[in-house]
Image 1 (cartoon, rainbow, N blue to C red):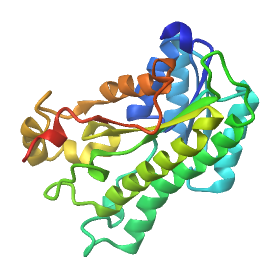
Image 2: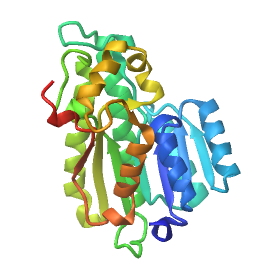
Image 3: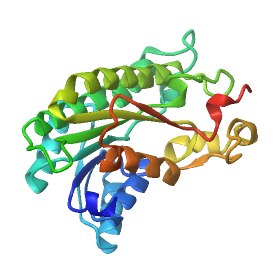
Image 4: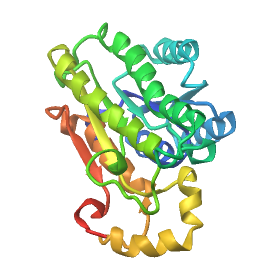
Length: 267
């Protein structure tokens, strides 16, 4: 995998959690990394960390829900590196603090903020990156590029009504999955792959509320039978690296669930 990925360009949204874990793995095998995030401090810190370790990393600070900023960010990556071999859309939010919840309680603000931060940002990043990929030559792997979008176990086969009744979040992740499958079908003849990774509860800054909830921690002992705790960001990053890279060059339109057994438990 190292030889196949060396010198390639991976574009990642987000600068903490799963995005940071994936960036570290990519840089370690010689992949050039470009990060887009609205958090300048964590962008700079991650970029400096990767450069210090011998990797090559650029970043751009942008609000991924604003079309003009996404256009400028992707253009900056293209100007710096000339192409994008893989895009991993990681950045997103839990909209609970904005009013997300069960439908009868969900606020319009909560719905709009969550759909924008998760689904709209993914759409905008996919759109601008695919425009670039369509102009790229077909590589030795037979592809122009690969896209991996962030889904969730809550948006597909295993909703959880007690602790995670955030229906705007589930809707945003289901939208991403549906869009990704349609994209995969359309762009396969253009030699662009599109897949989704759908984790359950991962230990990241976004899950801080859950990490501080004793009831959820106890619930993970049975809901995550393979680990009996929250999933580490590195576990998701390793699966993401497979889907982004040439080892998965014949895989498109798929959804990989990384959930420590969540969807096969009946609790």
